[in-house]
Amino acid sequence: MLHQMSGSIAVAKAIALCRPDVIPCYPITPQTHIVEHLSVLVKSGQLENCSYENVESEFASMSFCIGASATGARTYTATASQGLLYMMEAVYNASGLGLPIVMTLGNRAIGAPINIWNDHSDAMSVRDAGWIQLFVESNQQAVDVHIQAFKLAEALSLPVMVNMDGFILTHAITRVDLPDPEQVDQFLPPFVARQKLDTQSPLSIGAMVGPDAFTEVRYLAHHKQKEALAMIEQQAEEFSDIFGRDSGGLVKSYFADDADIILVAMGSVIGTMQDLVNDLRDEGYSVGILSLRSFRPFPANAICNALKNASQVIVFEKSFAVGMGGILASEIHMATQRYVGENLKIKSVIGGLGGRTITKKSLRKLVDNASKGELDDEVFMDLDGGTVIRELNRQQEDQSSGPIAENILRDIGVVSASKTH
Amino acid sequence: MFQIRIHGRGGQGVVSASELLSVAAFSEGKYSQSFPSFGSERMGAPVQAFARISDSAITIREPVMEPDMLIIQDPTLFNAINVFDGARTEGYLLINSSRTPEQLGIEDMTSTYPKNHVVTLPATELALKYIKQPKPNTVLLGAFAALSHMVNIPALEEAIRGKFPKKIAQANIAATIAGYNLTLKIIQQAQGS
Image 1 (cartoon, each protein chain N blue to C red):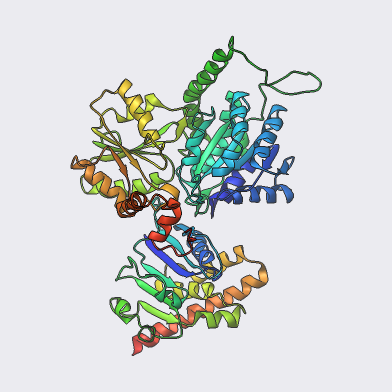
Image 2 (cartoon, each protein chain N blue to C red; image 1 turned 90 degrees about the horizontal axis):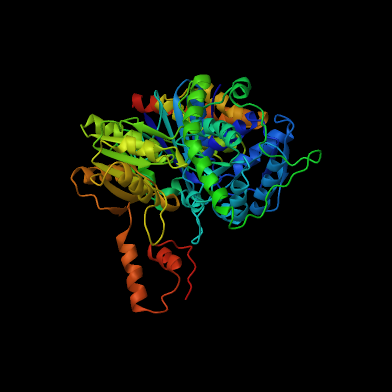
């Protein structure tokens, strides 16, 4: 049924349709409205047979998820940014133990400097943690991919993280088609745990593994992620058959098949890019988009297949590895070098950091520059060079120039910045 | 696509207004989208919210840079920020004030708009009368409907009923209708003159 509602409320309702048994939660902006609404659904009896636990921290939240999932309970939680960092040890344990927990990450920047707004730094901080990491472009996809996430997690016995841009999606009020419970039940079977703590049939989970077997256990984790590649595609097809919508899958092309220049990105920025590509196609540009909907497992073959006829690829990402550069750009570079060849030019663009507005105008400039062969290999979109140079000068002139964040806030005239010296 | 940007201050219901607009447009079968400017929200701070209404699916996510309709809930913002940034000169302008654009000292900005596209009305006074609170948002939604014809009053009524408890909803619906009627009157008077 069609509704007009915020992304967070829509996700909470989608989670309820999946009939979770246990939801341990700790609130953090920008995902708070998701867990808040789930508590309403449980308290009001709209979500039955579910234990909702308000725990004392994110570390407790993920630890609680691990315990619950190990007893065979369908388990869900949500977090963001510093909350994810605080639960980090348990995040690795959840995947290492092979527990099919589903978690929403309301993507947000990581401090310092503290920043509550959207980027992908939090998702990238767990890129090696062994979780399946999916990205959604819209609130409709957020609803649909969460439903797929439980099925995927339970089929593989592996945790799945659904990445949803904080504020841009969580707080946006848009049209969403919420599926009927019967359809969800048809798609998502009851949870049968691969491993289960049961007093009637005792076993242990979490053995210490030494050098004699650690490599094999870790290899199997890698193998499982590779198995997920086919399963993600298959489940997206099954989903489409039942619900009649395209959601999920590994990658999604938008006019990329015959395009000379292809923009590659993840998440909600795809929407703005689609709007831009519609304009540019009308003007005769040969440009398309490749949306990465699965980041882990990394769909190297699907990416190479989609990019093989392009001459330039602009990899746009909302985070970067400080001291190295674009994370996604590096991974795409590695994948295409292996399978496509070295003639493909890969340009790395970092943008939308800490909630900076991503405008169609700025994206257009990237494509314009690329089409003239003038796009630099690495671009920080809309970077204010003057502000950067003035701070570098302050540091050069004065050994005690003070904290960078406060200096820059004073420089750009944000009056609330406290004067430090 | 019709794009709306609402400027106001924290506590004036700016974000709620954009939400109600998008829900009303949705209930009339249109595609719509609304979102706030995501600042650190606090009472009195400048706040912006955005809405888009379209006959086809909306994919763009950037804030509304070139509004077809600019709604100014608080005229003191003229001195604080450039609310006119990017505004389309063939668009509409709705200002909560009992004063004229000339009296507000913004005639340089408003003179570029087509005749009858600029309306000032005392929305806070009407809000105090109907809602007993200085929240001009629903009065301005009524004015928006009269000025733009992008949504109709029954759809706004339904959206308001869906968001607020019964008593508050009724007061806000009365405020919306008052804003609608006053704006129609203002437009008719301007056409007559």
